[in-house]
Length: 230
Length: 259
Image (tube, rainbow over all chains, first blue to last red; front, side, top):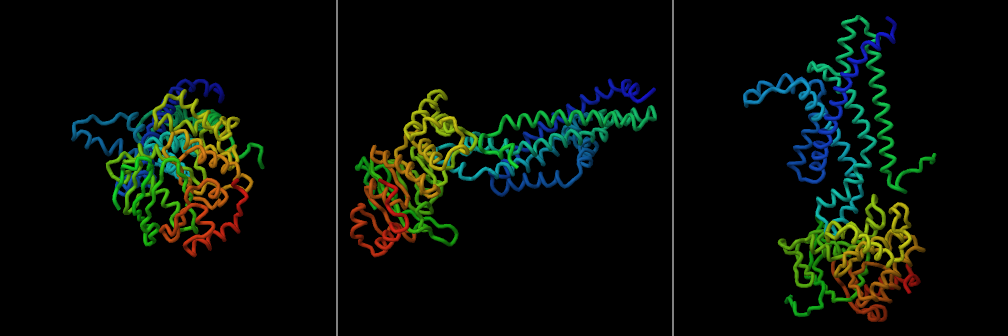
C-alpha cells in the first residue's frame, strides 16, 4: 500500500478525531475568552484584593505546564469530586476545562493590554457625559480593545488548536492521539504523523484566512497604517 | 457662606473647593457662581488648578473639601446621582477625547442613546442637527482619525450640545490645535456664548475672552486672585499679578484669533 492509499484508508478515522480537536479548540477558546475577559476587567477596574486574586490565577496558569494542569484536573481532582458527591469529569470535559482555564490566563493578559491601550481620555469623556463605568466599558472601551486584541487573539486560537493535543494525557482520541494509535497499529509512524500534521496545517491556514478577513472588516477607517505604506 | 437658592438663575455654585494631589494642594479654597447665560473665562499660569477646578465641578476629580451645586442640587452630596448630574454638564476636553471607533455622528448620538435612553433613530436625527450647527454636516460619516483637530473639537462640542446641558465646561479647547484651526473652534464657541449658552472656559485666547466673557477670572496658586469684566481686567486690574499676566499673554498669543 503506497502513502496515498494508506492515508486514504486512515482518513475517516483521522477526520473523526479532527472533529474532536475542533470541538476542544472551540470550547477551550470560547470559555477561555469569557473567563479571560472577566479576569482582565477585574485586573483593570477593581482594587487590590480582587485584582490580586485575578493576578494570582493568571500567574499560576501561565507558570505551570498545560500538561501538568490537565493531569491535575483529570487525575488529581476526582477524589475531591467524589468527596462532595460529584461524578468525576469525562476525558472530554476534563480536556475542555484544562484548555479553557489555561487559555483564559493568556487571553486575560492580551485583553488587559488592549484595554489599557485605549487612551484614558475616552473613559473620562464617557463618564463626563453621564455614562456609568459599565456603560463606558461596554460601548467605548471594549469595542476598541477587542479590535486591538484580534491579532494576538488569533495566535491564541491557533495555539489552543495545537495544544489541544493534551487530549492524549486524558486518553481522549483527538487528531494527535488517533495518529499515535494508527502509527503503532500499522508500524507506519511517518505516514500516520505526516497525515495528521497536514490536517493541522490545513486547519491553521483556513483559520488564519478567516481571522485576517474579520480583522480587515473591523478596521477603523483612518486609524491603521495604510496597507501600501512601506 | 450662606446658601441662597432663591436666586433661581444661578446655574452653578462652587463653594470653597479644596483639592490635593499627594503633597501638592492644587485648589486652596475656590468659590464661584455662574448665572444662566453667563460666560466666564478662567485664565492663569499653568499648574494653578484651572483644569482641576473644572474636573472637580463635575466630579471627574473628587474634591477633598467644598461643595458644588447644580441649580439646587448639591452634586458633592454622596447621595446625588452623579451620572444624572454629569449628563447636564457638558465637558469639552483639550485633546477632544472622541471615541475612536465611532463616526462623528455616532460620537454625538452615543450619549443620547445610552444616557438619555433616546431611541436610536431620534438620536441620529438630533446628532445630525448638532453637527450641522457646528458646521460639520458634510463630515457626519467620518471617523475621528479622518478629521482635522479643529473638526474633532467641533464634533466634541456637538457631542456636548446634544445632551442639552445646563452649562458647558471647556478645558483649554484650543490649546492642542494648530494655529490656523483655532479660529473655526472659537467661532463656534462665540456663537454659543452669544446664543445664551452658560459656559466656563479655561483659555488663554484673550480675543475670545474680550469678545464674549461676562467675567474673567484670574487664578494663580490654587486661588482666584481677581474676577472682573474684561474691561476692568484689561484696563486697570486691581492686582499687579493680573496685569503682568495679561500683558504677557497678549504679547504671546495676540488677540487676532477671536473676533
